Structure formats: structure tokens, C-alpha cells
Length: 137
Image (tube, rainbow, N blue to C red; front, side):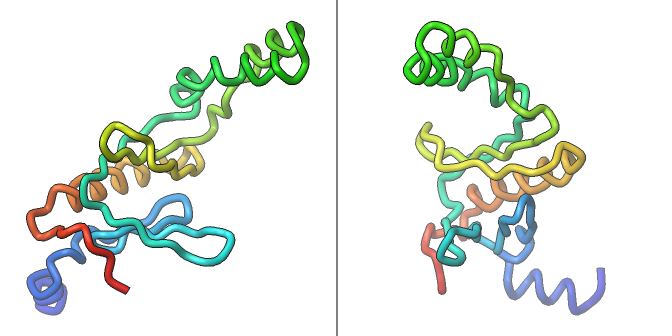
């Protein structure tokens, strides 16, 4: 490790958690993500990140598709809604706090390793003793 890099990590310990996935950025103790009006910041304190592929994400929302299809198009729509499958070519990082899903970050399934690294860094940032949960500007 270079002297500059070791100084940087010792002076700014939260910087070891930098990473990105699916258009979102982990910047120390916060995640920055794009919205319609710009970028929002989400503190990582208390967050849990898990990685799920498109097939697994589809399993816990399939009932929602059945109901939506049934409401919109009757019994035939419920059958069609049940047959619709989630895109298995995607990978998702699911962000949870207090057993509630805060959001998901999606990307191509070919970036699975990057998604797993991002989730590990989010979890490490969340449990860091120096993480106060405040979002700096």
C-alpha cells in the first residue's frame, strides 16, 4: 500500500467503504443515489444489504403480480400475472433497515461480483463504530 493511500485511510477511515453499483455510490457512511431531481443521500447506519438475483426477487412479489393481474383483467389477468417472470438477467442489492425494505439497486447479472462487494461494503459501513448515522453535505 502506498504512503498516500495508507495516510488517506488512516486520516479518513470511512473512505475504506467507497464503492459503486447500479448507478449508486457508497461514499463512506452514506449511499448516494439518483432521483428525478438529482442525487439523494442515505445514511448507512442500521442498513443491511443483501444480494438477490432476478429469480429470487420474483419469488416474493409473484403474489403481487397475480393480484394486480386479477384486479386489472379479472380471472384471466390473474393467470397471466402468475406466469409473468422477473428478469433473471438482473441482480439486485436490497437495502433494509429495521426489517423494512428501504430500496433496491439493480444492475446486470454479469456484475454479480461487484454487487456482492458493494453489499459487503454497505454492511461493513453500517456496523462501523464511527458511523453516527448523520449525513454530511
